[in-house]
Figure 1: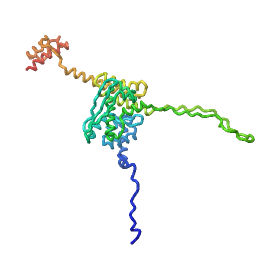
Figure 2: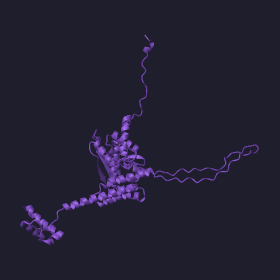
Figure 3: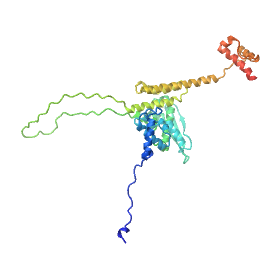
Length: 366
């Protein structure tokens, strides 16, 4: 028998692939198709400005949507970029967590105290064990961690604490739901509490001669050196906009558009406008962003006005049945008249309303 044939087989010890491609990067044909889809989104005006005309951003957002099994437009509408970091709108995180199946119940909140003693606790029950888990945040915590630099903690403290507690609860017990990405408030607060130092380091050139003993021996002739040229002034660099500042402003404008949709009174709109006022006064908003704020605020005012007018129209005025005009309207209805023939009543809106109420009361009886 061949001795070579009796040797045991050598196991294949090749290391497995460390980073397996996922999502749209798993296959070339899938990646090419995703590029065509991303181009459509990049050319659309229905996506936020940080995706418009930015093919790479749209492509990465498509990959996130593919991994989450989510609609790409929904992901783009709720994915912001703050200081170069992707972050989710908190209401989207809550919606995803509530329907993810990780929790057997919806996330609920409990608020305690007022002012500086305000504390909010977010709670939910785990689906696998039934255990009720919770995360509490407070204004004392917000002050200690520097969150109060965000003006929203002054205008709507309980609202901000609700979102912050929910985001922490989701990232603690269901981080896979949002791929571990933080919320907009968390990234904004971290950015404001730890400002970046963009001052370039100063280079100090020493003109002193090196220390040490002088060389021995006769003096040597130093080689002639050309005279130094006149120092040219440094070219003036055009200051480019800071991408972090642009992302911060865009996140604030997007949040304003979301918050103002929930406004129910003019005071609510004023509170939302107070948040973006510092950005507008410091010229951190471009013309398009200012126009978006104005359009959103105007749409909210028209919605509130329409709702108020509808409530007023639906409210039935209290009319005294013993009123003379009321009685005349009732008499006209009993006499078979089809309209008011008294000119003085027709020309007076208040009197005509009373006449009409009397007229309608007889028709209702009949």
